[in-house]
Length: 130
Image 1 (tube, rainbow, N blue to C red):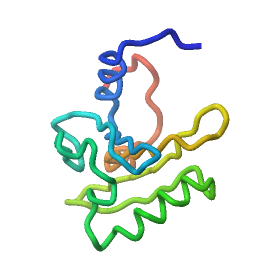
Image 2: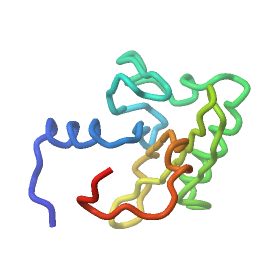
Image 3: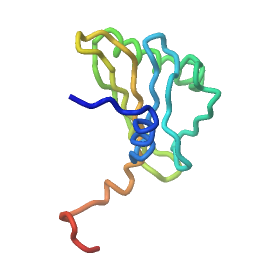
């Protein structure tokens, strides 16, 4: 069981992760995004309180709505895809967030630049130099 953490501590943890996080609640409203100068898809404070449908281009709106619908209904718990963007490989995953009873609480979008990860070969052990 986790001890209670301060909101500031949780936010600092999320902002430190090498991924971009965005949380959309069960009413499709954006409630949180991790900060950082190197976010793949920039967010501004103005997105907080907006419907997720308003944050995506019209051409991809039907896909966003399908993913959210599938996660809400339990048809799937994860949706993932990847795109090429400015010479980088971007991995995007959506996770259904549910409480202990299985009730849908929202969707967590996790976006990560995996370009350099795809180049990893061999192994590097903890505390190895180089």
